Image (cartoon, rainbow, N blue to C red):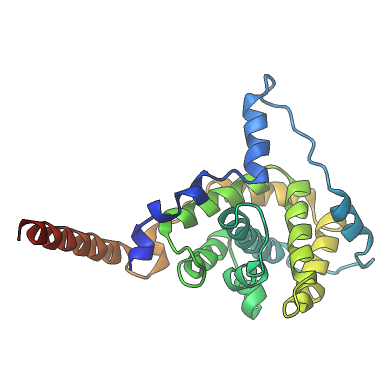
Length: 238
């Protein structure tokens, strides 16, 4: 239960500044607040894009794809922040477990449903399970989408690179990430992306919406902490 309440144990994760935060900070410091910093692809990302298949897609519900993309980016954001920007041998597992789309082919009917799913998973599976951290990753996801399609595509390419070099998760690149990368840069509607991004910025998730009695759990943790402190004080007196 302490995982949900104690955040000081991994304060370095909150303090870390991923690449999207560094871009945001540059924008804030700019004299021209409306200026857009050009997001560039690395040499490796360009190489990955040149090796993507040339495909066309007939999509009946593009919103549903973007809803899945949101929680995949959430999963990537979690892994990037908690590993301080450096992928590890656990990164492919982290991203897969936090994404209902990648772990069991789930689909979503709204942005909020997508976020609730990945937040719930972030409170169960990974090393750091904490509500405040999940809210931090929610804000990270919002920032990434606010920085445009290029930034989202960069994240997808980084996910693909992680999966391509994993002996058990490489197939997810072929089943999902390749198609996400190709469709997103070639076929997805810019206007729809902007609309979804704007709607995404307004999303707020309450603990009660997770349906796990998180507030009661945290109260129990605080009660247990107080009891332990009293016992320690009594022990010191003895």
